[in-house]
Length: 253
Length: 323
Ligand SMILES: Nc1ncnc2c1ncn2[C@@H]1O[C@H](COP(=O)(O)OP(=O)(O)O)[C@@H](O)[C@H]1O
Ligand SMILES: [Mg+2]
Image (cartoon, rainbow over all chains, first blue to last red):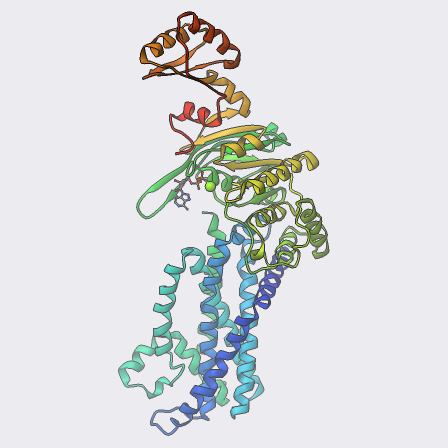
């Protein structure tokens, strides 16, 4: 079907473009490793603090890093679409008979692929540090990262292409990033938080995703939080893909 | 619309577009009718902000018209946008390629989006690069090309699927004179070699003169004039003649004499200078000078100027294109 062919053409172009600029791919790979090396040892000291969740410190820490990777790995691609739009590439592609939705789908697919590679490197490195998890748990973790990555890269493309200005897009990212990071228990588990902060964080869907992945890493796949967290991320990915497709379709309005 | 419209490259009726911004509604294009025949090179001339790009984007399916309809390359713009897309090429005003991307990557992926295979894209891309004097840039990043090379690459991108109709938005803006002349000869050869219909916008008179078989003049979102460049100029009341005299008195006498000439128009006297228009000025001038000599009036300067497109525009809108 031409939708899949068009999507693959865009995916291939985006991937080759990333490879022509490998610095970014390498910086992207370095980031999770730096977290492991520079932040992990700090966290190991915290395991005895009251409220620290059960399980090995790495089983608590690595799910947080993976969710963070999924959220932030995709969030900045909006800058790239503004650059492409300004170069005339988006208009040029929209005049071709290619499916409009392919133009975003191919790019999202590239972003998800890059994230998968980064996530695998992160998990392998964490294993060297002492992470032990069942293989099935890793597959679920990758699925969650892929869903988050697809969501945020779609939303970021949608926002970038709607605003068409770095000066408008950058504050949006900043406004969104800090509360999400602080309220999701990505770095320190929210179980350590005082009651009021915990209630506030309950509203943040990403907290539940992190908790779900932690449960999976502990091997507690059949607890309520797991389907709840994964269900939330599935809902998020559907809403985000729809939003992204809509923005690209409506470019000619 | 009429079946006969399908024989033409473009037929548009009542095309309108307004933009809504937070504070106001801009009526960028206010009802345009136009016809472009197959194989024509038509120039769309008008000052910045006249609505050229907006019109072009509508005809290329990039922007939904607020009102009106069009048949482009034989397909209905509203009902068969994909049909239009397959048959046209579009070269945007601001460029079409990423600085960071290799020329080969942009060309081949563009060809693939038109349904061609990678091999076919490569073959056609290389042939087009050769045709536009761009050999040897295949593996270079687009950002490393000169302005003229990059603009010709844009044209290669727009032609990769061999469209029957190509839209060029301000093709030579920002190029040096040599690169412009070179680009123009390539655009002309497009039509001469492949019979491609070319619809181009420009706010440069020399570009409109050099390239177009026919001009559409647009101002404030409306077409205000139409015709071949020479024809439009002829329709004006002839050549502009300027006489400079020794005294205001001599000038007054000259004004009277010039005013008595057959078909002289717009005769004005400013101090010791007289301006007027007359068809076929070169053959009228010797007789006029003889009459002035008989009156003992001897001009110290005589200037004759063929009408330019700027005069045409001035005549149509009351403003200069240069403003
Ligand atoms: N996206 C837009 N939003 C609001 N106004 C616009 C937009 N694009 C163009 N305009 C306005 O529409 C008018 C016509 O613009 P344009 O078609 O680009 O003119 P041209 O190509 O002849 O220079 C101008 O007044 C311009 O400011
Ligand atoms: Mg323009």
